[in-house]
Length: 186
Ligand SMILES: Cc1cc2nc3c(=O)[nH]c(=O)nc-3n(C[C@H](O)[C@H](O)[C@H](O)COP(=O)(O)O)c2cc1C
View 1: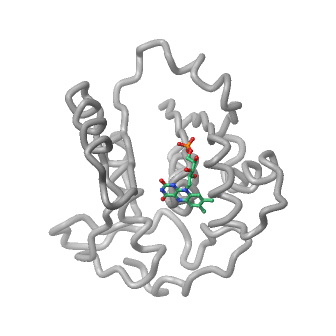
View 2 (view 1 turned 120 degrees about the vertical axis):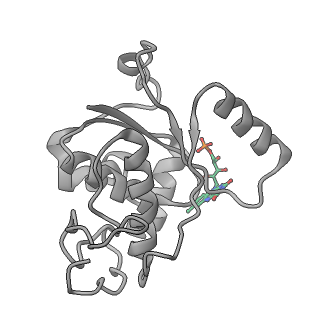
View 3 (view 1 turned 30 degrees about the vertical axis):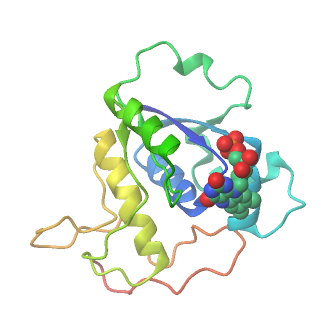
């Protein structure tokens, strides 16, 4: 499956990092583009290093799955993907509070067929770490794309799924990783 991931300048870089990893591991062909502000957020929230060049920040982001990802410049990303053949557009806003302009824009996108997947993680799956909350949202995105997710237990599932990633795996660039998830499989 081909998936294009656009990263803008709102807080939430750990979501992007985890999603890139999950898409790569699901053997998707991933196109990725980050706006200038998006790069700034990656630098700040993942790597804590404002001197990183855009290329360095993106290289670190895709490093775990680099063979699956094609990077596009802000100016030329759309060409391979703008053919109209996209089956689903998933918008993942994080901003809060939402203004009337945000709400109107999201309504228009929804009416045009986009999925508005607000970055509002649930807690019912027994989240213990920030990484668990990130995984919750990444799993919901994978659901929308029709990609099987092994990150988070489904509501009502009798048995926990096998994790798609190893325990304690870093989604956090060079920053101190959050406390590792429970060791036992979930
Ligand atoms: C670490 C970091 C986090 C940011 N988070 C937000 C945010 O959550 N919401 C927002 O409106 N702007 C945020 N900003 C500011 C935007 O990046 C900035 O307004 C930018 O111009 C948005 O441009 P874009 O729409 O091209 O991504 C953040 C900036 C940085 C450096």
